Image 1 (cartoon, rainbow, N blue to C red):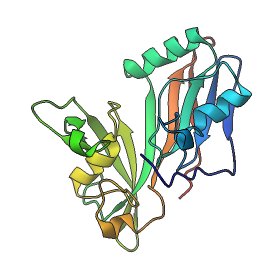
Image 2 (cartoon, rainbow, N blue to C red):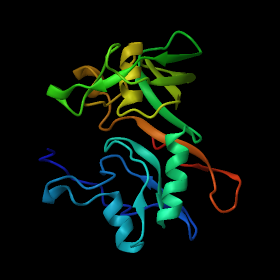
Image 3 (cartoon, rainbow, N blue to C red):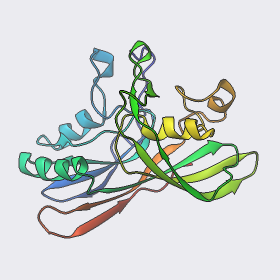
Length: 218
């Protein structure tokens, strides 16, 4: 439960792209992708979009704390088509994060299976026996001052909290992460510094690859 949920209001809705088939939205940090169980959690990206586009349905989600690109379908057929692209890993997703510490290597990958940590949900944890495969490729974009690294993250799989846990397992938690960072790292930012920056998918009607980007807000 989120007793202090206070979703951002400006902008109320940020549409990056629309046609008669689907929408590409820029979700703000602090806004739920879909409504929660309690009444005070009904305000979310999905409900805001549906107030303007009644047929819109959510294909995939971003964590409340994560900002950036999210796609919604405007018909059942398009939902199924794009949903299968996510399911079969035919989309290309790029995130940008600022993490604690200077990452030593220039590139690498984290291949650690994840499972929900049920007593502490929604936290996830590494579990080599029961976990589902989770693979993240990363690249250093910039070594900043004050012991911070800007990373490009490319999730090959799409597990819940995958990028957050994998960065923690690298020893470089994402700044502002309320679940996986130490108190010191969490207090280095007033938000989770993780942004869904770029998404490439196959347009179901135009039959061509299309790429969408959202400016990194940090």
